[in-house]
Amino acid sequence: MRISRHTPQTWLIFSIITMTITLIFAKCDSPADGNDELGFPFPFYQYIGGKLSVEPENRSSFNFIYLLFNLLIYFVFAYFFAHLIKRSKNNVH
View 1 (spheres, rainbow, N blue to C red):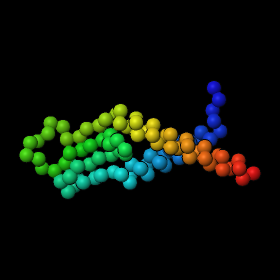
View 2 (view 1 turned 45 degrees about the vertical axis):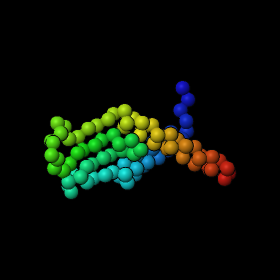
View 3 (view 1 turned 180 degrees about the vertical axis):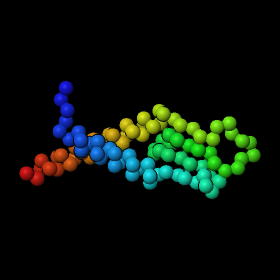
View 4 (view 1 turned 135 degrees about the horizontal axis):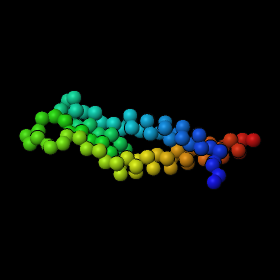
């Protein structure tokens, strides 16, 4: 099995994309009687905050499938960017 030469670069870009998108699109409104959400484009974690007339049985929910979808999308972008960087370096020489 052949491993691509830009694999470490892909994982670095993947990590940066994952952290950046999660921090930019995180919604943390529970301290002000709101809801929290993590994940973009699919919110994989939700916390229902605030006072509700009917108290929910569980205030938080985690969707593992949405997390996998998000990570797959981020990895595709990371691989694409790593490939572009590799091509631009090859075209310069």
